[in-house]
Amino acid sequence: MADKAGAMEAEAADLQEDLGELNIGDMIDGDEIVNVIDTGDDDGPPPSDDDDDDEYDEGGDTMDGEADGAGAMLYPDTDDSVLAFTAHSETVFTVATSAVGNVAASGGEDDTAFVWDLATGETKFECKGHEDSVICVKFNRDGSLLATGSMDGIIKVWKTESGEEALELDCGDDLTWLDWHPVANFIIAGTDSGSMYMWDVPGANMSFFSGHSATVSCGGWAPDGRNFLSGGDDAALVLWSPKTGSVINKLHGSTFNLSHDTGIVCAGWHPEGGTVASGDGDGTVNISHPKNGKLLKSFKVADGSVESIGLSCGKPTKCASGTMDGLLVVHDVATGIQLQCFEHTAGVVQVLWHRTEANLVYTCALDGIVREWNVATKEVKEFTGHKAHVLGFAISADNTKLVSCGEDNKCLVFDIDKVTAHKVEQAPANRYTK
Image (tube, rainbow, N blue to C red; front, side, top):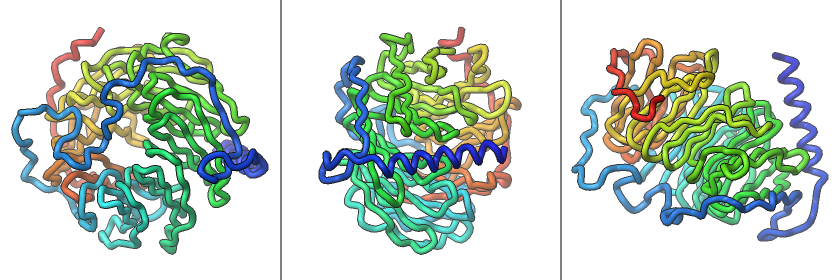
């Protein structure tokens, strides 16, 4: 394990050196671009009619996927939380936990992010200066830096010890996601126009990547940090080499039989890398190996969108898909057999596997509840307290606390072990089950 970590750090150092040496002049809004990559392949389905709609509805009370005319949603009266963080004045879109200490960060529609103590709820510092909704917050590997990203494409980097703003980066377009390198201080970010950017921190040297013909909806570094992946509304998955500035593979239905006919909504790496799960807008899930271009498995899980997806640790590897029609569908990756199908009373927003327990998977949904599902025993823990849609959650580094955020302008903290599990009936077999 030490040898593997050392190899990752050496590779990251090489990348840092290469990026610092490259320079092709000022090309975008005066920022220094050090590498320009274009796959030259714009094939793919045209953007859908609603591609211009914001994913985050700042003016309304509903999100896409909530049935119209169904009446007001009834949220649980119970409250299992041990702490509420209430510094935000509007919807809280995103929350993250640090790998070091009892520290969380949250960002919201009030154009603000906060860094705060998970144990006491005390604000450590406020991240000021954004002029649009903060939709991304993420700590680097050792928790020393925090990146906050707003919808208008501005990313700010903060020193978590002092609360000082260390850097401001500009995507020049609406931001969709960002991710820290697993070892070194590099940030990659995707945008609404289909472009991506990479910066080293604190140097702020920038590389520009162009290969999607529509919004880059999801992406992230491979666990070993050598490559990163992007998925787009053009139904393509692209694997990139940040060091050489080359596209390793562009997987698309027309050339690789990838089976995504509509835009890719979510994608996630296996914890050990290699394999990727991706979900699209018409309910199709693919398991692929982007480096060699192989499609390993493909299955239909819903009529509507697959909103979040993840691959478990351990053997056999399981794929969990959360859908906007309220299903959590779990498959055995090797066989493609559906293992479980669990129902929510509203659309699933996020899916996250436990870091070390291969049968535990977490979900949050628009019904205001975060859940822990045990795939083996068919038991569920329900974490209640929100009185509006839950939009995201994170697990503390020691796996003891869960922190959620939502449209009721607050974050809630739960002690995972203090909530009692109960048996749940498996939903009727998914009609797409083979």
